[in-house]
Amino acid sequence: GVLVTWIVPFITFLTKAKAPGGALHVLSVLRSFRLVRLVRVFKAVPFFREAWMLIRGLGGCARTLLWTVVVTLVVTYAFAIAGLALIVENLLTIQSAGVDAVDSQRVDSLLDILGGLDKFMFTLMQVLLQDSFHFFVREVIYFLPWTWVFFYAYIAVGCLVLMNLVTAIIVENAMLQSQQDHAQQLSDKLAKERYEIRQLANFFNAMDSDKSSTVNWQEFEAAFQDPEVVNRWLLLDFRPADCSELFTMLDDGTGEIETSDFFAGLLRMKGQAQAKDVYRLQKTLDIFADGLTSFLAEQGAVTQSVSCRRKRLQKTRASVGLAES
Image (cartoon, rainbow, N blue to C red; front, top):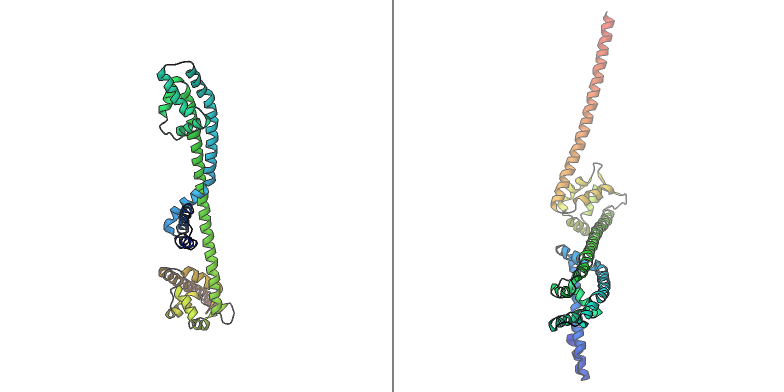
């Protein structure tokens, strides 16, 4: 835009030369290619995902469309050569045989659209596209009744068979690209998770002041005095007031947070506040389940101890009864 609007007119003014209108027109046309930058918007914004898939589909089908054109031209060329030998030659024979003025004029009009390889190919393309071709086909059938077989054979090969094959290939390419798109999304998700793990590892190392691969309560509480650490916690929707609660959620009961517990807890809590609340509830249930398990184990031990004492008491009573007798 700057080149065409300011630089070229300024140079033309300084050199007193006449600006080449054709060159400026070409440069103006080239400016329209800046619309290609919109493709990046379609790729980045989820709302335009379908538009991006269409653009990718067009790009992926470019080779298929190219070879479709080539094969169509080859088929049309072959039928045109056959038509020149079978149809045009017979029309020329009919014309030379001497017909009335009306039929002679009709033959001349047919030769105008069929008399030559290029003309016959162009007419066959009209037949392929089904562009009002029955009018001149009826004229040809009037002189050569069997020619309907020729034209409909071309339609069967060029339109029905070839176009359906092209459609199948394009659909297959679209499905492959869709699978590649899902694979790319999975790859991006895995890359994002690896990046988050590296960030959490740096986060953990920043709090682990003694480099023991564990964070105790003193280290955890002292980390909340660092503004950088506080900002990271704020990104996870935790505030300094949540320090004690957060340590309890990440601690497995040993009084220290290990690396695995830190990663597992924060990766599951990262997100909206609802995710954090769900994890808090799950952690509370885990603590309750561990306490219940310990309680039941203690109860089992007490029950077993009472049972052993009861058996000893029975044995003692039996021994006393034998001694009295």
